[in-house]
Length: 271
Image (cartoon, rainbow, N blue to C red):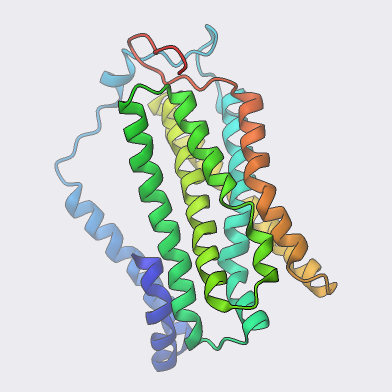
């Protein structure tokens, strides 16, 4: 909701108080969100040891060791780096793309950017809902996670074709679909962390994954600047984005051929 509203409110705030004021407003918003979280989370108790004591996080008999020496860690964080590169590409360069291709002004960017972020939120909600329904239907965790990731990756593949469209609104809708694909993929990565990592280490693996995702995002900024400065346009960048999720899924499947949710009982056979 915050990102959907952002394109409408931030330009107005910037027009009144300048861009410094807009940045301060965004920072204050973070503290407001924190305060709300603390209020709604009051009384919630996190008992990690009681649950983990009856769960088996071993992989072929070996327990989850130091995170940097775990194959499961690197399966997650490299997939995160590859997929987040596209997320950062779209987040940072979509306004520039709209300006260059369609001549949009700052105020005219509000609706198409809101469509993109609406797509990201809808993609996350739908992927979460569908994952739950499939698990309840008896699908194995491995099949659910990788099916959602494959479907999410597939809807990003047509991205380069937006460069052949002359009409703006189909492009804006396609960008929303791409963002939905990213969030469905990202949601599955975070779910895999809780599937295969002991709760005491979930924070560390998640933080390392976020760090690697940011490194992938920082790298794509440098690459994008160089590609555009060389006059190559967005074609090579969108081609990379189209295949980045398939590469991430291939890497994850190579290192984690079977995702097994750690449970006290017996995991059902793969469906």
